[in-house]
Length: 107
Length: 124
Image 1 (cartoon, chains in turn blue, green):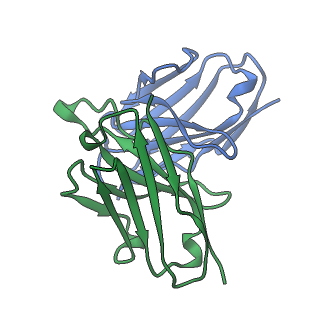
Image 2: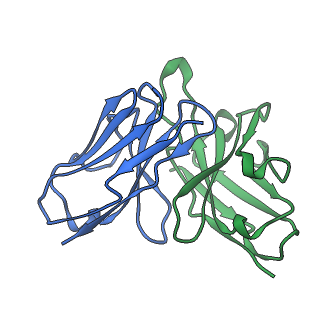
């Protein structure tokens, strides 16, 4: 099974800050990676697919990069509504596996 | 617009069964694989099961093999998850998600839309 790790597990940043979350795979997964945002009590919402493509309707302050084993999600200018938990998902092979999540708080 | 609506959750005793449903609309259901993902209270996301567009292929995570069965009825645009021999550790919100696969290596629609989830609580 492919293991996914994320760092940091949580962070606190101010409105307007640039925020970066890292996701690492235990083996190469090409660009078979999706990023999700989840707010409490809600279903996950897809932000980024194929590691760097922006899902329709997602603000352009969100971007993704990486390939192989290391990936990043960047929020270029943090907004209050970005307070949420962010997960990566690898879909290169079954079982699909998620990262443990990164909780983003607004200072 | 794509809509997925789960139902069937509830409180059930250990060892009992439950069937979850996911009603799909706003897209051609028979053209998409479908996934189940769960989330235990306060925990992260865990993949559970997948079924191919025509129902010909299914995979399950190891912890549910032999207990959970995924199925679909393309004439009713509905996905199912039969949960048998339930355990306390199966307590979670269960989400269904659409999966467009990777036709021609273009993985544009992998788990792109999710339902709102249905809560399964296994407790005596």
